[in-house]
Image 1 (cartoon, one colour):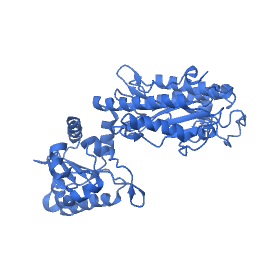
Image 2 (image 1 turned 90 degrees about the vertical axis):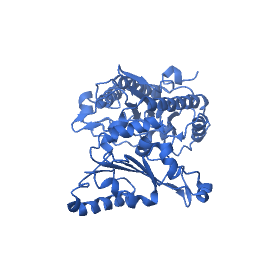
Image 3 (image 1 turned 45 degrees about the vertical axis):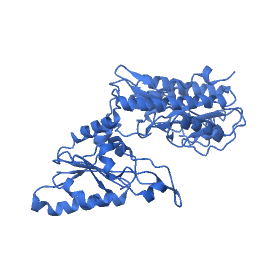
Image 4 (image 1 turned 90 degrees about the horizontal axis):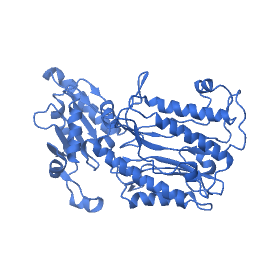
Amino acid sequence: MQAEYQKRRQQLMSKLGNGTAIFRSAPMAVMHNDVEYNYRQDSDFFYLTGFNEPQAVAVLAPHHAEHQFVLFVQPKDREKEVWTGYRCGVGAAKELYGADEAYPITELDEKLPQYLEKADRIFYHLGRDRNFNDKVLKHYQSLLRTYPKRGTGPIAIEDTSPILGSMRLIKSKAELELMRQAAAIATEAHSLAQQVTAPGRYEYEIQAEIEHIFRLRGAMGPAYPSIVASGVNACVLHYIENDRQMQDEDLLLIDAGCAYGYYNSDITRTFPVGGKFTAEQKILYEIVLEAQKQAIAQVQPGNTFNSVHDTAVRVLTEGLVEVGILKGEVDKLIEEEKYKPYYMHRTSHWLGLDVHDVGVYQHGDNPQILQPGQILTVEPGLYIVPDTKLAEDQPATDPRWVGIGIRIEDDVLVTSTGHEVLTAGVPKEVDQVERR
């Protein structure tokens, strides 16, 4: 993979001109008191380096005569490594990660100016680490003060996100291999969940079955807190308590994916706990399924990102009118967003190193054009939430629909000729998810 990281750095540096880019590793996150969460590197930092330790800084300086890629890392410390794990150390940072030069992180303030003083701008994303933000700004201000003496140095700070977001949006062959594996593992987990779900079991039992497969197959773990929502819980978009006992006529909505080699999958399926849909559940399920199928069909190179959502909204709105939940002319209902009490989220997001991956959806008034190598989710849903507040021109929701929540989600790759559903192996047709 080092050749892959090097290629990414070179691609980025070709876009920096005479600038210097600075990237900070993710901080350690505290679970409680002195117990920390498992470390997860910042996605941009990992994308460019593959380096998975905290307290590190990467500098890319394409204009520097000797050191275009520099790492600042924690030095070796045998006593601390006994407690918290091995460190790469300064020497190995060059050998293992291809740095032209490496320094202890304690020397950052001393060494960083030499990589900034001939740059015309600093590329840096002002993130959540306010102390490090202040450090970068301090160096920038110091160089601005001395600019008249040298006539060189950064006179602007530019966010790295637009450049890196565009790069990360198109997945390489190596990235696709990791994402296919993440999709395959999550596919197996979801398929198992459908088989072992039964009335009387608790949501957390199904969560355990899913996450067992994640780790058993070599994934890092869940890509996000697993949603296992039965009955009315499925109407809460990010429900994660997962503590309810499932009943015979419930639907179970599972939204769960895994992280494999830092890349993520994201799948949702909804199916009857007792094996058979009620009449109302089946009607709404078939509306959502049709919306998803037609939305997926829009995933074609040259189509807009918005066409996926717009297609799903139209099918869902038509379905709601047909069953009497909404009243009116479909185009007007869509224009006035009267569907939103029942479908309040977007249909898609980018997927990759982050579950909600980087990359813009809109360039001003122009939506993003779908291109080969992009991966997006397609996840329409209907949620008949109790106590939904409706417009005066809409009928009160018939109680027989209330409490039903349905979402169906797949991970879809844009190809040169159309699309590929990476998670197609998870059953979703009515006759597949019902058990006789």
